[in-house]
Length: 277
Image 1 (cartoon, one colour):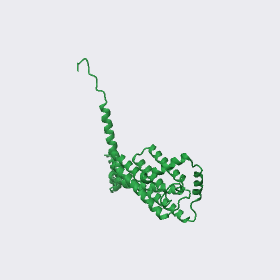
Image 2: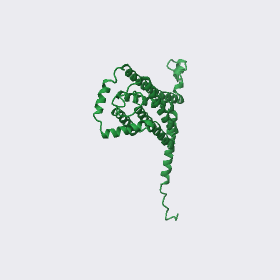
Image 3: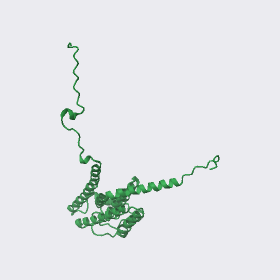
Image 4: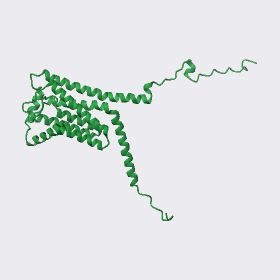
C-alpha cells in the first residue's frame, strides 16, 4: 500500500466546552444578591435608605439654620427676613387679614393639632387604609414634637409687629411644619400630581400667611418646611412596607369591584327567534 493509499488519521475532536479545554469548572455561580428574593430585599433596603437619608438631611439643615439664628442673636433676623417682612406688611388689608386669620386657625390650635389630623385619619380608616391613617398620625406627632424641641432649643424672638397670639419661640414655624407634613404624607398616600401641587400650594400659602401676620420671620417658615418634610419622610421609611402592601391590596379590591360592576351591566345576548329560545 502506498502512502497515498494509507487511511487518513481522523482529526482530534474539539472540546465541546471551555471547561473541557482548560480542565477547570467555569460554571458561573449565582451570588446570593442576584437571586430574586435577595434582589427584592436589596431594593427594599435601598428604597428605605432614600427617605431616611433625605429626612435626616432635612433635620440637620433645619438645625443648622436654627444655629445660625442663635449665633446672630444680637440681630432679630437675617437681612432677607427684614426685607421680606417690610414687603409683606405693605399688603396688609381686609382681604389679606381674613385669609391669614383663616389660615392661622386652620394650621394651629385645636383645629390644626387635633381636628385636622383626626379628620384625615378618620377618612383614611373609612377608605380602609388603616396603615395610612397610622402613618399620617405618627408623622404629624413627630413633626409637632420636633418643632417644640427646636423652639425651646433656640428660643428665637418673634417679630415685634405680630398681630396674633402665639406661643414661645419663633423658629421654626409650627403651622408651616404641620402644612408640609400634611402635604408630603397625603402625597405619598395618594400619589397623584395634582395632590402634590395642592399640597405644595397649601404649604406656601401657609408660609406667606405666617409672615403676613408677623408671627414668623421668613427663615422660620423655611425651617418649618424642612421639619415637616423630614418627619413625613422618616415615618415613611418606617411604614413603607405595610403602606405598599395596603395600597396594592386596595387597588386589587377596587379593580375586582369595577370588573364585577362592568360584568353586571353587560347586556345578555338576544334570544334567537328561529330556534324559539
